[in-house]
Image 1 (cartoon, one colour):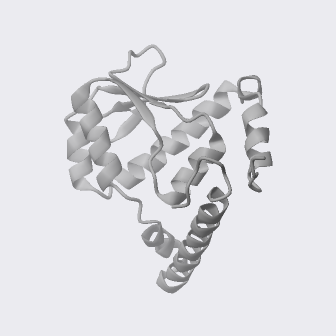
Image 2: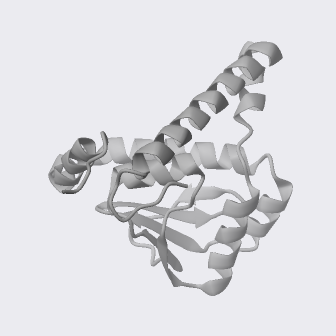
Image 3: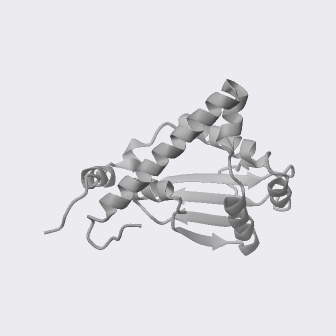
Length: 183
């Protein structure tokens, strides 16, 4: 008999959700995408090398897909990102192959990248890979601008401890899943 983890029920529930029929209105999707672009540009502006690499790809369109969700971005001459028009043909398509939201969250907590199918321009794919490898958001620095250095550092330490605890919990629960090993 297969041993189930405490997350098995949640996994089954998430897999059965009818995501396509639960699509939010177009205006909400566009607004959420605009906010994500603002966040990505904020992070990019902290790395001049990232901006110069992205500027060399100006006008190129990247399509990121997962399940029924997609996100089309275009590199700007300033080395930032903008939402691409819906009719733009993508130069690069990145499709997240793992369908499970829980598995994606677990991989993110472990610090792993999701499995991605890559189709299209090799040079643009290399630049996107460089960005994912080298650009990091210093959340503690941004938080310190709002609440000060000491509280930001304290919150950052607490978040790191929480993330470490979640990683340990995932490692223990994955030991109970048949066919999976603890990491």
